[in-house]
Length: 82
Ligand SMILES: [Cu+2]
Picture 1 (cartoon, rainbow, N blue to C red):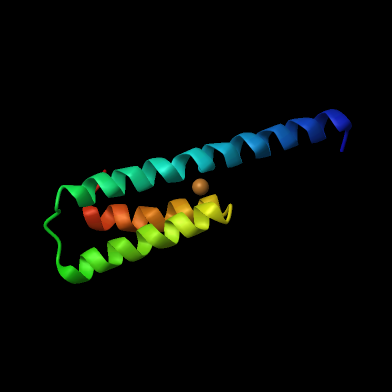
Picture 2: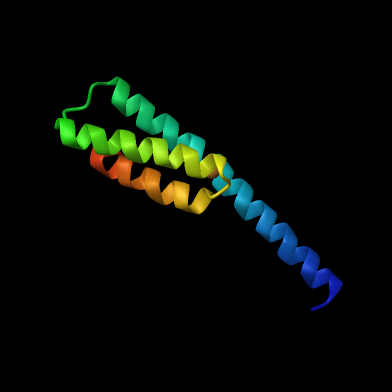
C-alpha cells in the first residue's frame, strides 16, 4: 500500500468515526426528548428504553460508536422515532 493510499484510508477512518461520535448524542437527545413527552408505553417498554439508552451512552463513552448507534436504535424503535 502506498503512503498516499494509507493517508486516504486513515482520513476516511477518522471521518467515519467522527460521524458516529456525532450520531450517538443526537440519538440520545431524541430519546430523552421522546421520554420527556411521557410516551404511551408499558412499564416494561419504558424499562427497556431506559436500559438501551444507558447502554448506548456507556458504549459511546467507550468509543464503540457503531454498537452505541445500534443499541440506541432499539430504544428509538420502541419509542416509534422515525
Ligand atoms: Cu458515539
